[in-house]
Image (cartoon, rainbow, N blue to C red; front, side, top):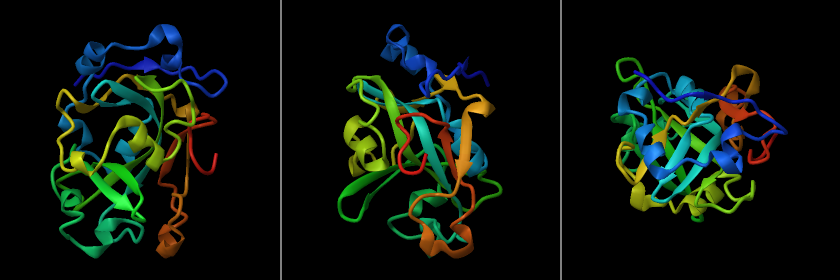
Length: 215
């Protein structure tokens, strides 16, 4: 499986593809679309690998700069801890499917089901932040945080349960982040999760201005 991968050389915390002369066309992004099998791996591995990829919805696209991995029923920060419900059923299903839910009655949160299907009962990656790539204002704050991200890309629960291999909603393997450019640490807002709270399941492009919360 070949994925387009342009090495990232961060300058002042920004990704190479964000320069004005490197904006991809939608056709180029579609050509770099990741197959669903790419998401059928360990959830944390996928969360890390998504950094530098492009999340595309319609004519809008952003480079993923921050993610969090949420595992199966034993992960006390994960929705899967409740077992399979009507709300979280997709977490127990096929990889490469969108999981969108409303948080605190205000924010739509966009997740991607990612799990090694033969090994993990459930799993999903929360996409926490994107940097502008196509169709978005040239402002690092526009997708800084999961609620801002969904508003910027026009995502909502209307996209819940979609496979991420269509023409309108997909992930493109546009770049890959170098190991030296990646930071990991505890997830944000999961203090209730006991021993799971400090686990390093949050991944970021280190120092990027579009990263939310703790930098």
